[in-house]
Every structure is written in structure tokens, then in C-alpha cells.
Image (cartoon, rainbow, N blue to C red; front, side, top):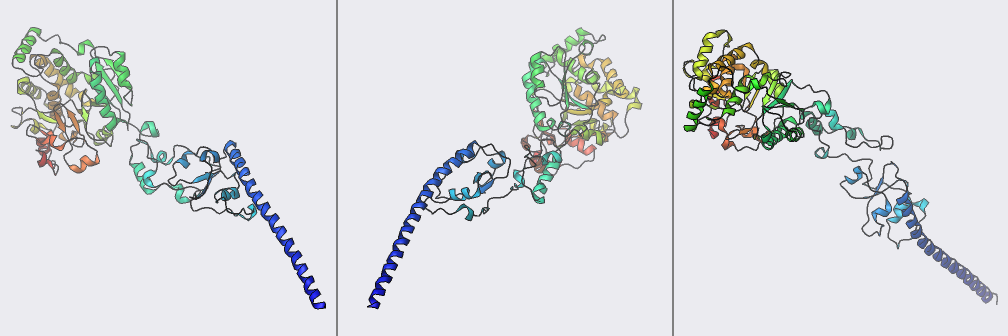
Length: 519
């Protein structure tokens, strides 16, 4: 009897324990479901609080996105990302560290996964979570035009240094490539405050009606050269410049634009000129259809450029000049300071194009030159360029001249006693009005006779155009390096009517390797 009774008692005890365990398990399940519902309500509240909370300059934690996660929109989770965050190559959710790490983890899980205790969730840094990412060299901020190396290393926006994450030594130093690119950029006074420009200016003779053709020239010069160095620009006119001209060109010049009116005594017929004889010459040249043959203003211009532009009130304060005319083009980048180059190499005259002058415009010019050479042998330089001007040791003029609509020179040379004696001698002979002497042959003959030939420089690397001729760098490597836009087939410098090949020969210079392809 004892045995059945004991078995019955044991069954009753086991049944009671089973009922007790089942009841407890049911209560536990209800509690879990209640907690799961309560989390989503609290997570909405957390997102709302995070959206309204002020931003704190702390490094952000990046959490790898889960494709199956139902997440709140980005605008409900955090504020507008910073500049550094927008530039990140790998998109990832970025949550302020003010948000507990466990909420970030839980929010990335599927909803049907059981909720675990927040204390048991360690904050594991994802593979994308880094204090900062070093950008490739090609994405680093380039140095400002003409900027110094120190400037190139400074970002445009500085983060809060106290709250910024600590960078490694590799991240704090710019890449070698970035350093080389930065140091290669020319240093400018405006950017770095240390660059010393040469005492130089651009000089332009123009009138109010030239404003639109002038701004195209200025744009070429500024884009290809002067945006790096900010040299001044002197504009001269035989009349007053109007406000439209001054305001328009001033807006384009990176240096200081200055405007001067030419005195009447520098622009007109001198007292010794027979005006009737001059008028007769103009009529005859018009009948022969000689270019500018009947123009009075063109003759005034040639005389002014020959003897007065360097003595104006605005130009007297400068030593070097670059003459720029309306409607010219620069085809290539100029990656060095040409004025400092002239100064350091002690050049007094530089050109890009040379050619033969129209014989009909200068029938007696060489006679006047020979008279001057006889009267002032002390002014003739030793080892000069007379062999470039003459093919018979000075007996006659071969009409070679530098095209003076582009010239970079030393105005102290034009102001010298030697040149002033030369100009005054020619001016007294009256050829500017009785014929049609141009300033180009006058300048060219003076530079070739009064200067040693090592003082004259050919800028073969400056791509230049003035209707109808082009100087284009001869070698392909130079054109690519200088980003030239000129067609080498248009290069006038090696054509039959150019005097540049003769200049190379007289100077004993080696011609560029590809010159024959453009001859």
C-alpha cells in the first residue's frame, strides 16, 4: 500500500511544480512583450530629444548601416552634417556621442529580435568609425593662386581644436605630392605678404571707344599671368577717360589701374614740321593704299610711343613696362614673373615677334640712322645687333624690326642720354610726318645699336597673337606644359617673312628642335 501512495504523492508534487513553472514562464513572456512595445515608444522620444538637442563639438560615432533595419529618417536622428561629414566618401549614419551606444545598437536590430539588457551591450566601434580620414593627395585643398606652402596646408575651415579627435603624425602632415604642388605655385604679395614685385607696370595707349576690345586683352593678361602677381596697369589717352572705361577696366585689373591724359605737346605736330608737306605725303600714301598712310592720329601715336610714353607722369615712377594693346591674345600660361626675369637677367628689351617693315613707310629712315651713328659714335654699343639690322655691315637696312605692340623693356634705357639723342635726331628729321615712320623700327634699331646683344631677349615661351601674326612655342612639350591654345601651324616665328631665324643666327642660339615643322 505504501508504494502506490508514495507514487501518487510524487505525481502530485511534480504536477504542482509543473503548474508553477508554466505560470512563471507565461508571466515572463508577457513582461518581454511589454518591454518591446515600450522601447519603440522611448526610441521615438530619444530621436525627438536628439533632434532638438544643441550640437556638441565632439567626434561622432559612425555605425554601419544594416540593410534590413527599419530606421528613422536622417533628419529625426541628428542635425545637418558638418562640412567634414559631407565630404566623407562612405555614407554612414553619424550619431552624436551624447546618444547612448546601446540605443544605437538596438536601433539597428530587426524588430522581432528579443531585447537584451542595455548593460550587456558593449559599444563596439565599427570598421568605419575613425577619428578622421586622411584625404588622398589629389583631393587636398590646392594652394591659392600664388599662395605660399604654409597657406596651402591650412584648411578653409578650422575645426574646434579642443574637441577635435587627436590625429596621427601621418594625418597632421600634408602628403609629399601636396607639398610639391604647393611650393610650385608662385608666391604673391597679396596672398603671402612676402613677395617683392619688380618696379614694373603694364602700359596701354587706348581711347574710350576701345573699352570692349581692351577688356578682352586684359582678361587674357590677367588669366595667363597677372592674377599671380598683381602688377599695376597704366592707361594713357590723348583725351579724358570716361567713367565707364575706368570702372570697367578697373574691375578686371588685379593690380592698381591708373589713368593719365597725354599733354598736348606730346601728341601733335611739333613746331618745325611743315604741315602742308605732311598733308601731301598722306595724300600720296592714300593713293598707293599704304596701310595707315593717310592717318594723322597714327603718326601722332608712333611719335608718342617712340619718344614720350616713358616720360609721362604716371610711368616715371616705374622702371620696367609691358606694352599691351587692345584686341591681343595670350595663348599660354606664363608661370614666372617676367619682370623679375628681366631684372635678374639684366635684359633691357624683350620681344615675341619680328618681321620686315614696309619699305614704302620708311624710305629715308636708315639715312637718318647713319647720320646719327656718324654724329654719336660714343652711343653705339660694342657687340651689338647691327648684323641683325643690316646684311652689309651697316650700309643698308634690311628692314628687320621687333613688333612693338608686344614689348617688355626697361624704361631707363629709353630715358638714357643715348636713346634721347637718337630719338631727338630722328624727330628733327621729320620722318614721322613726312613719311610714316613707325615706333617699331625706331625702337628696334635703337635697341640693336645702343645695347649689347646680350641685353635683348626673345620670349619664345610666350604665346602671343596680334592680328594677323602669332608667336606659338615651337616645341610640343612646352605647349603642353604651358597649356597653350595656339595652333603650331600658325606660328609665324619660323616663316619666311619672320626675322626671328636671323636673330637666332646672329645671337648664336640653337633653334628649337621642331622649328622645321613650322617653317
